[in-house]
Length: 342
Image (cartoon, rainbow, N blue to C red; front, side, top):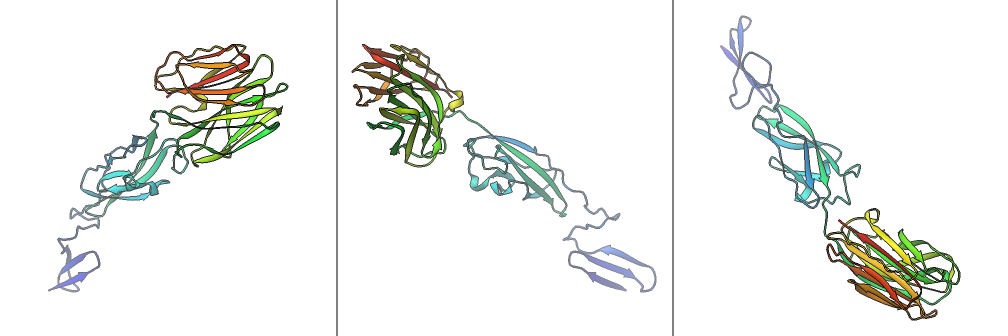
């Protein structure tokens, strides 16, 4: 006689006479036998054959194909950055099939390496896990440079606040460049600057030979806000102060820039990097003329003290070989220039 034994995931059939010799046999062809025996049950986990590393450029979709040595179902089961990923069948991709920005990583340790663990499950419910590291690489992006605003003050002070200055369109890669010039009674430097509340980095500054004019270039990463205050702090009280503001999106950072400064009838020549930009500023007195060659002149600001004028200019012509700063019949001139490349 026979007796069936039923369990949630398996069915056995016992044959023979109760109390005597009996035999057990598998009696459910729709379920694989997971118990270890001589009946050929599948107890071997799958082997994941796809790579455990991947590399993808910023602003590009991720499409990492997952493969195994047998038919499997894929799932995400862990990793510090699991929430940044999703699966589309057997393809690992960014959440919502999005992209990543190298300059603003959102992985757990913000180093542009994203870690996730995937699981392969075969038809017999055997599993294998693999931890995958996806590296996001930097891409040189075109530089967009725009003159956005200018302002000046005729008040004697050692601190100037230029309120609600236009910073241009917000962008996560945006940097703000400010050319600042001042008319000084005695020697004074621009000690520091904040742009939209962010501490700016001094690229360079120059005083005229007779210390009565100074001009400088600062830069800061300011990704948000259409306007912001520019606060200029000087080492001593000056007579006048003015600024010219630029928005730079993409390209190198301040650390990769090159520049120079000149005084005493300054004439400067430099090479703008391919696909790069140049920003220049000059200051003169006594109705002098400041002439930028091969540049777009943005603004002339009369600071009001002895007809002192702040000039600013910029260029975005790729590979331009000549940029000159030439004050004509000048009094107490000073000039600064800086370039940024990809």
